[in-house]
Amino acid sequence: MKTQDSLSIPDSIGSSSSSFDTSFRFSDIISSTNPIRSKELEESKTYIPLFKHHELTPKNQTPVPINNGNPFWLIYVLILLIAGFTWVKVYYYRTLEQIITSFFSKTIANQVVRDENLLLQKASFLLTTIFYLVITLFLYELNNLYSFLPDFFGSGFSRILILGVLVSLVYSIKFIVLKLTGIIFHLDKAFSTYIFNIFLIHNLLGILLIPVVIALAFTTTAIAIILFKISLLIVIILFIFRLIRGVMIGLSLPGFSAFYLILYICGLEIAPLLVFIKVLV
Image (cartoon, rainbow, N blue to C red; front, side, top):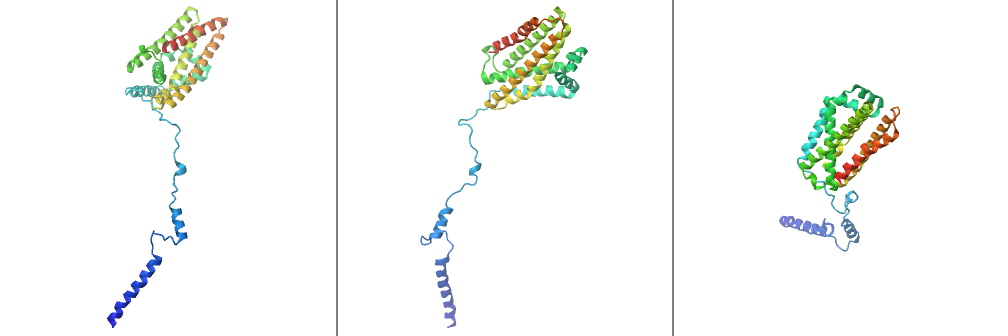
């Protein structure tokens, strides 16, 4: 009797638990007879992306090409350029500071010309070499964008060499012509002052274009075009500033004719520039 009672108790518990399971079981299967729970399930099925408003939107319909027209040796030329400027910055800091100060102060520029020693220093030679190298790299990278150089300039490292020789030759001839003109017309002091201003502006331009030529080598074509336009604006401003300095030097001379000044500007400033552009284009 006692055994039967003990056996009957689990049966009653099992039956009651089974009845409770059919009403209150924890399951994802929702009966259609419970409309509230069914509605909650349908709402939970709606996917709401967490990063929907943080997705990146494309700005271009087509891929933007990277400027990959630069050969492997260009990095060594850029390292050489940076090393040369660093050498001047470290070992000839006072000379570099004097050159930059002379650009903004006409009095200091005239004082440097009277000393007649800055153009003969090693720092001046290094800065001039840096200027020639920067202009050569600038023209080389500009050709990678617009392809304006004729076949005469070749390709690769030979193009760099030909451009470098052409740039150095043009400016060297210009300095020689200016020096001889000053000697012939007995205006050696005035032309020496003007030569120093050309040297000053060229070196400053070379320093300003160092980050430009580095950026042009490792940026996209669209950004390279923007950098070229900015650098072209800098070149034009410095060229106009150089002409203004030349006019001021000419007008400071007693009895100097404005006609000869205009003739000089057209003959030795604008005409060589147009010839140089014609040769390149």
